[in-house]
Amino acid sequence: MNEEAPLLRRRTATSESQISNSRLYLAVFSAVLGNFSFGYSLVYSSPVLPKFKSPNADPLLRMDTNQAAWFGSIYSLGAATGGLGAMLLNDLIGRKMSIMMSALPSAAGYTLMGGAVNLWMLHVGRFLTGVAGGMTAASIPVYISEISHKKVRGALGSCPQITAVFGTLTLYALGLVVPWRWLAVAGSVPAVVMVVLLVFMPSSPRRLLSLGQEQKAEKALRWLRGSNYNTNIELSAIKHSINTQVKITWSQLAMPIYYRPILISVGMRFLQQMTGITPILVYLEPIFAKSNVSLEPRYAAAIVGVVRLFSVAVAASLMDRAGRKALLYVSSMLMFLSSLTLTMISHTTPCPAVNVTTLNHSLHAELGSTLQASQGTAVSLIPLISTVVFIFGYAMGWGPITWLLMSEVLPLVARGVASGLCVTVSWVTAFALTHAFTHMVDIYGLYVPYLMFTVVCVFCLLFNAVCIPETRKRSLEEIENYFRTGRTFTIRQNHPSVLTS
Image 1 (spheres, rainbow, N blue to C red):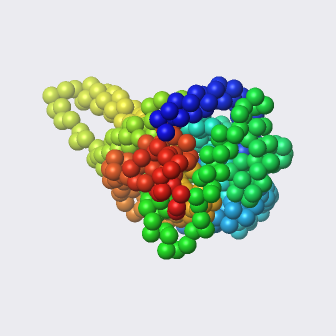
Image 2 (cartoon, rainbow, N blue to C red; image 1 turned 135 degrees about the horizontal axis):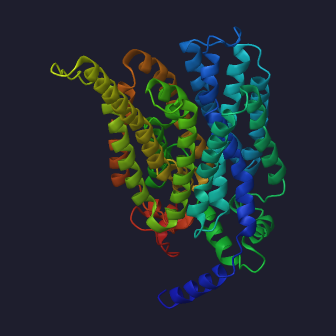
């Protein structure tokens, strides 16, 4: 074993040195266009809700507080439905076809919203775009993790979040100048382009091998890695992983190799939503208006979109350098500090007026107005800065890394169903929180939801410290072996625990 290990490492290094990732990048780009649509549709309500709640709105489309809460939150309910659908589709028709299928509810939803003449068309359209978002959220990270080489999987695994953020920023930017109906029309374009490109992309080699299609799997892997890549070693590792799997039963879910990664993935997606990211993004402009931010809310929202895009790009560059856990720690701390600041600001009462009886009345009035103006300007910037820091922190870690880790740690035999379960839990949580957010703000103001988000950030820190493993530069087979053995990433071919499940 000791004599064979250096030889195996040299053979692996030789094959890896001949990798060409250009086609892999094209395949990833084609897939993540679905995440662009997801990010775009998620925040569609932010610029259009003020128009629907305006007294000047079309009477047939005007919304009160309850209707606005449903319009903002029903997207998450649709995403949960899409996640449930992906549980079946991922294993039934494969990851790539599941992504392509998401274009159908996306196009139908945008068509309904773009041509809406009453409220039910708006709500149903928003629900359908949510279904598409749930399907892509469950399928795209798994597809990318299965076609990517371990040396670039971290960076490519953050691409779904980057393109989702870019879709959000595009919506904010277009919302400054484009009417809400044309915003819906524009939203259907990326989904159509995605389908056209994915037709020419390969299926996941792991998926093909699991179906016994070895020649197609070898052809797909060679297309992804380049014609000079030695596919034998990677295909052998994938086949070994598949051969050690058996059809999962309910009793086997009690085994650590299954329940630990599933619980970790579900826990990450639950905490990710409980940080409040979805209601903050969905109601960003109304939140800024209620916080009395000096900058016009739609421009403040665009600034947040730019910062979010920048921070996700930074996270992608650091993902395979700093590691997953380090970025999650930084992310949790930044979110905690910013949400704590927002909690205190939203609960702060105005300072009492200064009694300057000895001053001339006119001087007193002039000084008072100057102090009030300067104080108001400074205070009004704090919610914007704190929100920017919160979004920056989220996009540095708990945004992209939870997507990546979900696709990395879930066992192959249960990956399709388990990823759908994770997305469903995530979006059911998002629906409940987003729907309750509007009512909580109306009753208690922003203080109570911000306080809840602050407490959740503490749990994020603890969960990362205790539960999440470091998967940087580990192959999917090594990560699976970690949960199988409970102690090591190293795969030993003659170890009995590897040959049984």
